[in-house]
Length: 512
Image 1 (tube, helix red, strand yellow):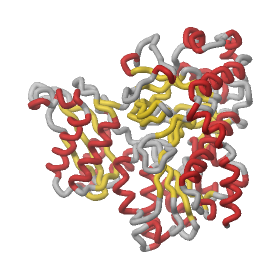
Image 2 (cartoon, rainbow, N blue to C red):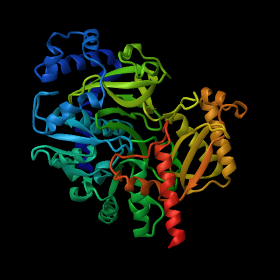
Image 3 (cartoon, rainbow, N blue to C red):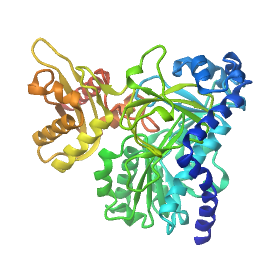
Image 4 (tube, one colour):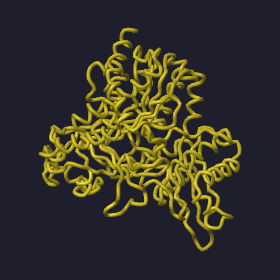
């Protein structure tokens, strides 16, 4: 299908002039985005409440509109889900992305407007492919199918005209016909919410397809690949899909999974590209193959602000615009969007690796860290250290979580790590020592607290049986979709739940 590749490639590359503007005129692009958002939404209930019509610059916007979170918008969104319109955004809103981002029992419902679909999420997907084709002009990616590890879609019972589901399912449900033609499996399978059945049907439906690209979070992609191996008797994915050339991943750091994918896709030509596509918007693209950072996408109908972590939790926090940020400093992301979110704390933290152009890495979540003893451990530190420990001991990771061990009368504090391996370390003591040593090298606060075991003891690592985390998510009703195991928690709720579940299963086995 050379003609298909040529036509789609030509269509995507029409975007190049606008893409160049992002690289060379970022501040003007962002100013234009903010002014367009305010003009468009000035007639909404929210726009009238804060008199968007009279706002002509960033300073006035920041003075008038407070920094917000989901609870601030919840009552607006609930009304929108009941069918009320022109509240946060003027165009009709019928779709909502269901998101938790954690295993918390609370679900968030993010409005997905026509503008956010077309100008943000879909444009992000097209730009990913455009940047890939610029680097791989010989690509035959459109000669086959794209497999998407999507979430589940449900109809919102509160209103027959209002629908919600995982973001990927909402996007697939609304794709144009030409895009549906280029993807697999059938939509009825792709949006199933029973993940046990879904993986089985996906594997059988795609086993003999010509899959050239995959999109999805690493954990569920691995589960699918392993089932494909069981069905085919193969142990290399490119023996099943010989034309596979691109894996698009996001949602969690790929660092701990990289070695596992090398085992699953041996000696292949597959390229790995990271994207940052949250329910709230498509925010970043890895625009250079082999890089470990992403380009901040500035013209998708999103205006960005950046909150220094020292301001987090304040009633009136200071926020920075692009011209004020510095490389290698942690910022909480705040966004105003064409889905009707205004100065909204998305919950992720980033640091810039470059400001010409603006490239960044995701460093963690505003609520996912451990700072029980002043160690300020973030996910970026943990992922890097886990990878180093796995490399040193020839281990392959499935998943992990960590939480504090609090001081008692008899013992000092520390961190407890629950880790599930595909292949366990050849020496557990070496694994723990490497983990600890790497954390010290990555984080001076952690290193200080670990000095001579005075404030914190060495990590307490517990190897969990295969299936532990999947079973925990399933019991919590959070299996699949965008639900993820929290890497770090500043409390013991998740760790204690997992340990209790493990204890109960062992008891059941012993009494069976």
